Length: 79
Image (cartoon, rainbow, N blue to C red; front, side, top):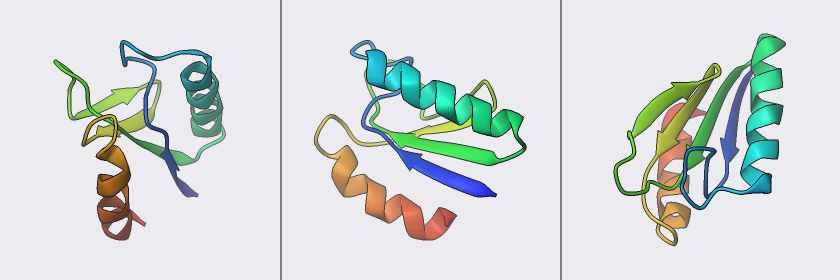
C-alpha cells in the first residue's frame, strides 16, 4: 500500500521533538511491513528537498507556515 503522511517537521529538522520521532518510527515500521511510505514536511535551512531515511521517502517543501499551503498541491500528483 502507498501511504502519504503529512507532518510539519521530520526527524532531521533542527526543531524536531518527540512527535517527529514517533511519526518516523511508525513510518519506518510500515516500510518493514512492505508499504511505500512518503512523508511530506516543511523544509528548513540547509535541508535536502527529497531524502530517503530508513526507507521513508521524505519530501520537504514550504516553511513553518507555508507547508500547509504546499501540502494540497503535492497530494493530487502522488495519490
